Image (cartoon, rainbow, N blue to C red; front, side, top):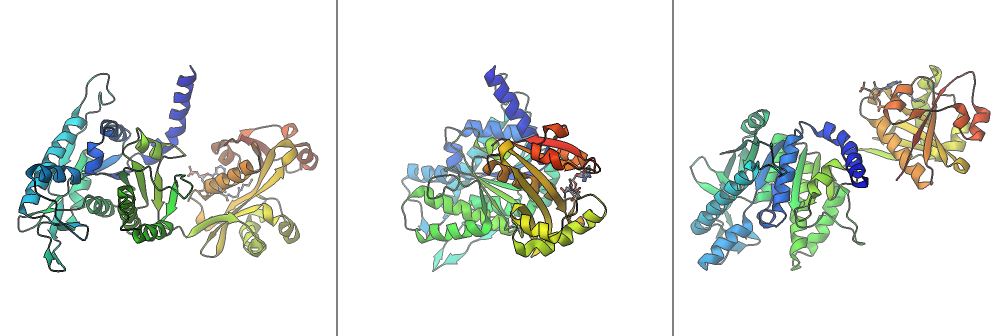
Length: 446
Ligand SMILES: CC(C)(COP(=O)(O)OP(=O)(O)OC[C@H]1O[C@@H](n2cnc3c(N)ncnc32)[C@H](O)[C@@H]1OP(=O)(O)O)[C@@H](O)C(=O)NCCC(=O)NCCS
């Protein structure tokens, strides 16, 4: 029974994510290593589930180890020049063969519908085609990379039409040129360019590692692209480090940064080795890997005395119309440490306060307001989350709020109505009978 409850809880908690991501376009990169991995069947099941949850999916698959295996079977060494593959005619043949076999393998696995398997009833329609136009990468330091290519363009219109028809689009690392030739492309580049061209909501890069770990071995769940760039610079200083995982991580980071800088809002580094890692990353609050996002120009932070002017400007119209209780400048000065603000380009566009009633392990959420020019951007919810985090740090287990006009917003945020008598005694004594505010409480836990 405990297991069923856990499952039900997990399912319920993931529903906001399911709703938020339905109809999102996601590009998933599967390296040749991911395809060879024993966990690949589980990755396929998760892809099928994403499809069932209404995600518009583009799968980009690589074939590096498979090409190398074919070359090794022939006794031909793989040719590299400054970490770039030199694709001669024989290597291209191996690349086309490897890519064709993998496509068939993915098609077969995504067609499975056996009863008692996670794929039962999934009915996925897969499409592949000549969506990637390529040109030769050219000659580097006098070395001709032959059929190693660069991407010229991605036919995003055709891909979008197929996604509109609920098809799952499969992209390989073979690109075609208007001269009728084939070119071998790096899988990371195809994935990033496809995500950029499609304006994808997410790019998911599946690597060996769980994501980016800090010096104490903890996975960083989120990185701004600027921080990711600094980490990448560090990794590139160790470029001669023979540690394979590190060089894979730096390639993935570089890909994520390129995509983020070109407008893909979220790039996720997730492990292909760990069962369910992609689902955990997308549908749980904690995630499982690392999400790289573009530098945000809005910042949620604790307020300081220098913010008082901005806060007054923000809240005075709401005080005038009676939505918020009046606060004098002196009171604000005295309480400023209890405030959190959202700053955007140097202006305060939202604020909230948390008053601590430590004896009762309760906090009061007060003075939550968003500048009228910035309503509709979920900032109220972002502030509430920040207040909840601070309340948890202060070891509180409930947040209460007194409101006259915003009852439904608080109900929608998980608050429930309580009696004045349930408030901390100290607060009851100053409860303003004339305002006759509604009182709400939200229990909070880590
Ligand atoms: C409450 C507030 C902080 C939310 O900020 P936000 O997330 O940027 O909010 P939005 O205005 O975009 O509203 C988000 C949702 O809440 C709803 N909402 C906003 N104010 C509401 C209210 N007073 N009562 C009920 N629902 C409300 C909106 O309609 C919207 O839902 P919808 O998208 O389904 O229509 C903001 O509306 C605000 O500053 N209000 C004035 C100050 C206030 O009332 N503070 C509370 C004092 S106790």
